[in-house]
Length: 311
Image (cartoon, rainbow, N blue to C red):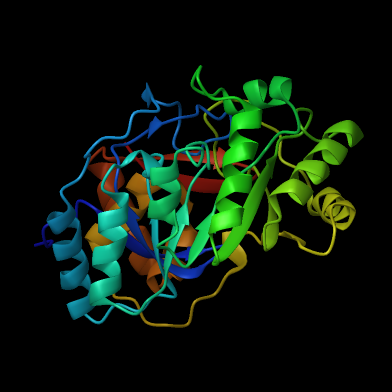
């Protein structure tokens, strides 16, 4: 019999940016400030800029204490999941609580749209690494790719990121997600580079569509084009490796509920599941097939790779 499924924690999963990452989900699925065309979780269910008490702080911390007691190994505890984490009004308390119970560094995956709010900047400043995103060099492209809440503009996002850089002594790793034909022409690259110079992140990490996206026809860039863009953006820019090429040798107990938890948060290939949980292909397929037979997991072919995702 499977153990009770965790409501707020998932993984550890192999992260292209953070090594082995133990995820913490602090907002409901697809509650976000944006509705990005490339989002692997599908279309936004509730587009909002209102911060709320989405999760009870003690419940999140209790799950983490249990997971740590099991001897879990992770490079980062990553606040991310299935929506925009800075929408959680208790984000600062959650980070503070995490810091009291473990020395594992804390990262936040955010789209950065709420950093104009000083309380959001204060909350995020408690993390060790903040990983915001910027996918456009002008308002028109921002609207086409990110489809923001009506009160969010590209200049507000940039202003928030610049303000946060001025206050935060930790690492800022800025992700730029490229969609072929939308933000990949020379003019856009120049504009994005100019904005990056204003923000002054510690790293610039280039990404593109690998998993199934919210909208059909979202075009991925090949490695050669991404490398050329990275060279243009400067020495801080790097292309993020595909997760299927990551190999985590640490032992992570491969339980069925952990597999399902991974597939609920994002589409995963068989290699993602195997490397994330340090289990063999036969064992991973056993769990995936079981969930497919129950009708709770579907598959989709993307770029010649089969990705599995929980309904």
